[in-house]
Length: 153
Image (cartoon, rainbow, N blue to C red):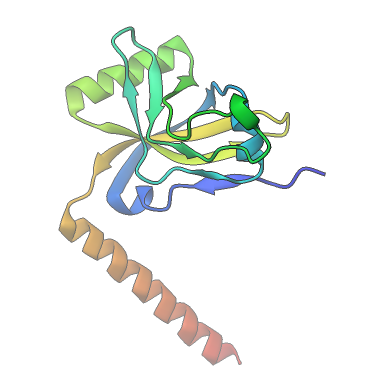
């Protein structure tokens, strides 16, 4: 009876060019998983960053407080640790430090086993003219689909 939870970061693909994607587990505490299962989370304005000991954390991810949590509730904007293989962490850290790329959360979902997972992307920031190109392509596709629809009717 579990509904499908898929919380997306809509600005990520507009502001960044995604080069590579990974699926990571996320360490949650207390009532955070209950809030995520209710769909009360947001990935806008969030990013990932390594701490000095080499662990990857997601920063600025909003998980609203659980309504029935009482004084055991969690902090809404706490840093949350991401779980990846050592090889993947090493590769990501190398790319971020040498190439100047960034790691952006793309979407948060609950898998078939009931665990919260997050898709992260190794990304390169887009310039303003790239964003304009994206908008133009989207408008052209929309117009083309309208023309096809009117032609078929």
